[in-house]
Image 1 (spheres, one colour):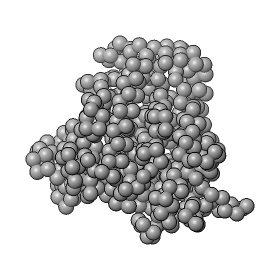
Image 2 (cartoon, helix red, strand yellow):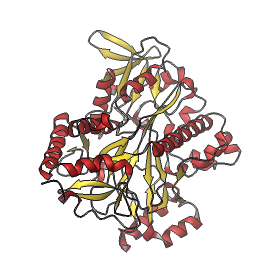
Image 3 (spheres, rainbow, N blue to C red):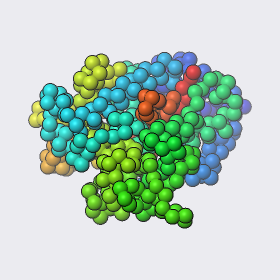
Image 4 (cartoon, one colour):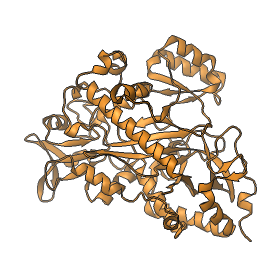
Length: 480
């Protein structure tokens, strides 16, 4: 018996863009590939494929950490076997839009730490920059290699019910998730043998090689010593750190493995000290150098910022890039694109309200049931208020917190995230998704891996896709 049950009760969400179906009935052309395959196999075969994917994730140790979970901090990353499929024309617009956005953001960061023209010309309020917790005065006047501040970015996109992609946020500090993108593709190759090459699905496999090339370009050494600096095994993305270091063939180090001597950074080895030329750091600015930031930090390297300012080591991403991915600064990215590039934004922002503005605060409070409030420096889906899910007491308590520092919060309308089909309990059912493409910026420009990480809100009716909040992921296929 073929898999009729899988499609028996697919019911699209009203007023929501469905990635697979038009009008809840007509299959979008790009999904013919997977639709035909799923209808040709039995339920038992699909169950086996799901079980195989779980076993593969388990054996590979594909995990993430939830610090607040009482059952244990290490979890296997949930994976849905039905891929999300994006057309070549859709991807072309995403690709161009992210390249435009990163170009403007990089120019903005350079400007903020040097001439500050964008402040002097009244495009962005000075207070917004100087009060931003991610603005580093220690980076003022520092020249970085090739003027590149953002080498690696993960730009979160959502598709609204109008079918258009919007930028939800820019992740420019230590963006994570690329290892899950790579692992998802490897799983797809195993459970759908032959389907990807037969249908010209664009590859994501060259990401580690491309990242290594971009890192190597930052040094004037022929064979630079490149390391990946991790906070250690208890970090939520430690699996990713180990994976990327292994795939690039570079050393994975912790702060205790490095030291500063004679204005250079060295790695301790069994053969003595070895000079380090490039550091791909997954340690936040605050913990990078205890001599200049958090004095109690044991994750970074004492004196590393002095070496960086001398130009004797490259750090990726550059310290201070977080000023550009603060959610209060996000509001001004379209203005940056017009100011620095004299272009109209190719990807739109989501309408955003700054709660430090009394009129916008009032509007948000009066319409709280249709709003989500976020901390400007928050991440991972933590610290948000989803207005439609909160009761009056929760809303009151949250606004009491907001009132202590309104500038630390923004609000956005609760959007109708697009849905994609997921195989849940033997049936195809729609779940909300977002998309995080990964971009690499180097001497020869920006390269974006075709696909990225599609995150899924596996809980029915949920809009929160973060793995730490019960989300999962699926492979993302871009048709050539």
